[in-house]
Picture 1 (cartoon, rainbow, N blue to C red):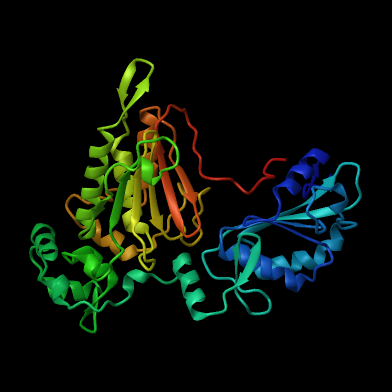
Picture 2 (picture 1 turned 135 degrees about the vertical axis):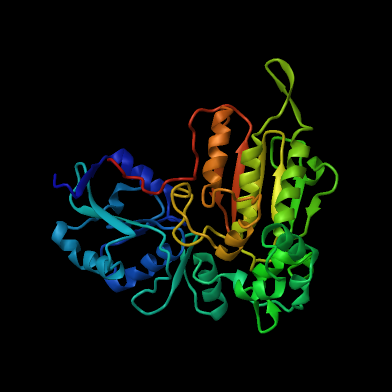
Length: 409
């Protein structure tokens, strides 16, 4: 077979069809108009990427009769030209032809990656994949939300209604300046850093240097819960009231880390030698919480939620993974949703983000040194959840399902 063709078995096809159409998967008939197909390309590229099988007929059952591929490679030329026009640099997509053993015709299998920019279909409209639907982003609100998710726009630069003095004459800024930049005055320095415009502080300024950021941004704090269970948390298994952590970002990170460690150190479980203390590396807890505070989407009206169970710690932060970052490449790719916050908090003499861009890698390495399971990073509906699991495992990185399912076939 030519290098661009891969043979699949009947069993493999049934497995593919059994997955059904969803957020990362779509089937299309070869009779679809190439221009109409760009709606799916737009939706996948603007969301989290996905797989497209072209030459599979509609149907709810994993039935081999749904296979109706192209007679030959040339029969798909119109679609390949559409893909190359949609991705003019040849990046963020790849394709191969699948041949089914014992059947005629070739199915075109296309893998679309999440793009750092917003991609429109050939009709000029922008789509977003949600479940098995390609949803048009046809309002300013939807488009702005998509641009926030992509990291094209950053909410950290939006102006707030706070007074300038809230950040120029706060304890937070005075302590920061005296400790780190003693030769400068707060107000001129804040203006130079583009944290004040039209005599109004930005979201980044409030989060970094207001004594009470939550007075302006009510849902910018952190909630910590302790559940006495290894299962899903419920009201019945919740111990006491959730702890609320507020204050400017530097202190919030420190306080959230300390409180989480304090709770964890009080957990004991039955082990091979009797009652044992639960242990997680401090570095992993610190890096996961720091990452959540620095990279969350502050335009969303929700707190960061830290849930502590008998067998795991979950840190859930508002917002999707930005730009081209996915759960599969998160340890290798770098993109900051809030670059100003990340840069300025690193100016502290003892910054929480000591090695900028390496936080998650540090969290993984620290877990592995204790021979604990790798953290799990998950993209949920509108949030990202990082889980530290208590249990032994060697080299078991779990970053969600890799949708490049045919690599190496």
